[in-house]
Length: 155
Length: 155
DNA sequence: TTGAGTATGTCAAAGTCCTGACATTGAATG
DNA sequence: CATTCAATGTCAGGACTTTGACATACTCAA
Picture 1 (cartoon, rainbow over the protein chains, first blue to last red):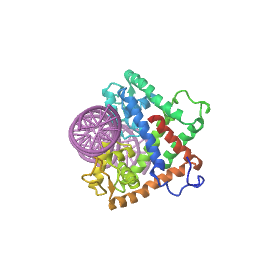
Picture 2 (picture 1 turned 90 degrees about the vertical axis):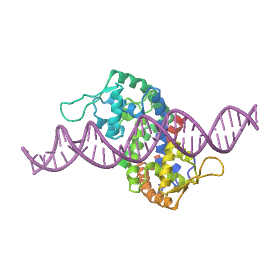
Picture 3 (picture 1 turned 60 degrees about the vertical axis):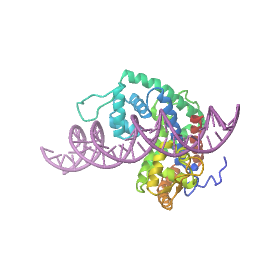
Picture 4 (picture 1 turned 180 degrees about the horizontal axis):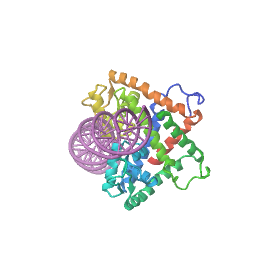
């Protein structure tokens, strides 16, 4: 994999070929992950947003709709739909009313924990495949660089 | 940013904290990029899928609906909707009929090229911000690792 | 030639997600 | 206390995307 340009010189503007764009590579990697998770979770009767919601909720119980939305990178409106679906499926519960404020804390039901645990096996297998594919001494750098991208775009 | 585990030892299963998952970091980075592009392209009257379609089409003229769909990681049906929108906006043209086969080659109009060029400025600025945030000697490794992820999940 | 297999375009229906908007609630400020 | 502000939950509408299905068109092998 030889580069035409001097690797020391940062290109003044992105590579001409779309395939060399950071954005394109990032999008493609995310699409692969999304597709793999879609297929893996389908056998567990969960969508990716639903799984993400359950996963976050297991780690941080009692989060409200708005907090879950931020944690999973969707809008409050989208998360509201997800929560209603999971609530109808008896995988989580929300108090109808709350003593103070409007935010209603969300809790996993026993059934929700069971479904999540079952699905986590499939998802962790995907995570393991990704980790396995990356040289050990690069993994930390990769995670750091992904975070750098986030910071560079959100500031 | 200290690690609790020995960095030499590959964890037998993914980190306990969701925030440390490769999938989570990847998803977050993609969400940041998507959001930044959404805002940047809105001022140019284009959606991200529309821009992606125009960008690919400029680099590889004559692609069909199915080929554009694969290049932008959406289904043929989704791309079909995008193409009709761009066609209605006079940004590209497709022959009503074709001599052989069913695939209709798509071509940018002059107006399509103008709109794309205008939008590329905003998008390339985002690309530049990402590149700038990543240490020069890591950029190549980052792109490689993203590709490794793709391969590990598509095989 | 015939057939199976593959690829393409398209339609229909449903799900998902977003923008925009509004009312409610609590905190902060004067 | 009154007002302003930010945050939350929710509704409505539209845009986007997907799954599933079907017909058309080419390719290849029997």
